[in-house]
Image 1 (cartoon, rainbow, N blue to C red):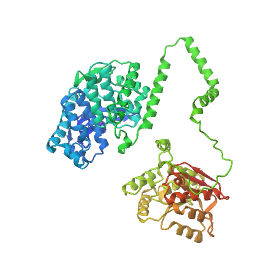
Image 2: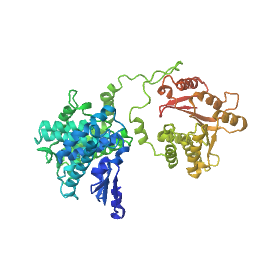
Image 3: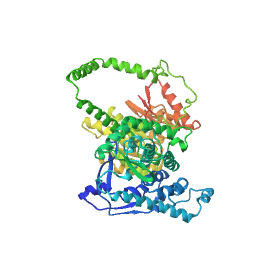
Image 4: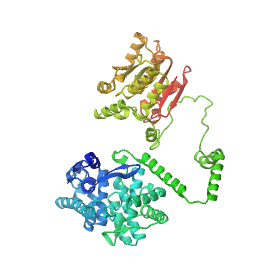
Length: 612
């Protein structure tokens, strides 16, 4: 927000009301405004301090405990290099109670024994206020002697030398990333610089660990990212590393300027062993509590940021090669090597399969079936509640076209109305439904199970796009069925906010889906190019029978049309005692055994079966 104020009219004054710890004792008093970019922390910014910063810790009562820990890291940094009194005060009150009581503003999370151990409430309250006050005072003293960064001897950058490069690729909260860098910095001060003793390093790392912050994250094993951090920080700091570290005593600072990549790699490995070994004095083997953005409900940055960082590293390597002063003979050899590589590309790919993929696929079994699978009473045991490993679906969504404003509005209203948002088809599947409608040139779609309308909107958008190619959209219809009154009301509200062309083709029917389908078969001639089953799972077979015309009534599926059944692999992921799990398994086997159709079960979200 401060950066936006710096840009707007080049100088718009603003006031910060600190509703978080970081805002209150760090970002708030700072003249620097910034935002992240290109996979790196604080890539863009301006010098534009607020008119005034208001810090009131009672506003922190509603914060997620993970955000409390994250904010405390910025206090720890000032304690380590600027204020020994603050460090000792954190040791006194921090490890047990700062997080649980949210700086003395909420005691509801403490049991009777913890309340007793807290001691005098007034003394504790004063200590909490003193922690905040000392943190702000030490920060302001460090910052305001060098407002415009005319030099890079900045103690409050402790913990911010290497962490900006790996924080976003790791998907870490800022405070946890800074904490890992502070622990590593203390280790460097002890081992590389000989500025503090082993006991002092242990004391710093112990405080970080006791506050449930991270001393280590596995992203630190990636030496390429670490070395890239060094390079970027030297660029940022005007040609000097100027890494602030504790020196002489806790609460005093010195600046490390020279360290090679080889030395850095060695110390990272040593530090990892120091904080994560099984007999380590540090809790959780050096790992923090709720260290990730996901842990506190924030959007994960890892995939996009890692892609940026990897691309930048690759670009740097390419530039090094391009500027290398190789002799003409060496250049000729390079060209010959490139030509050889081109000639052997196919061979190299086969070699890669042999070298890298053989072990990875050692347990692979032939994935072409020669016989129809036999029926079973139950679906096989499946010990997971999702089909995907962590980040698989998130990565797929990140590489899929962004959904329309109509779908975005549907998601927003669904959340605002406090309906169960996971029932929405979501970005990935809504785009899939839209593309299926386009690919099948579907003009009429039946959506059995509307919920709040995302699937109906997706079909409408796909059908309109398909029909537009033939020059007319007049015959496009999407009929969507919803039995729940509240949900139907929300769906109607959402459809009313869609762009007119979508509004005009979506027909919402509130009531029993089976009754509506029977009435449609008996009293109209309408058939559907796509029938999407996504309603109550116990009735999937009944919906299928009506669509196919097995009930003695005419079929609802147009000739050449397609049935799409959602959640069919929930036959695996639902609880084994859930009747819907068995109902879906019976449905899957019924379709498999129906000689009139061909089907393919796709692992999209919780499974989508295409039936034609």
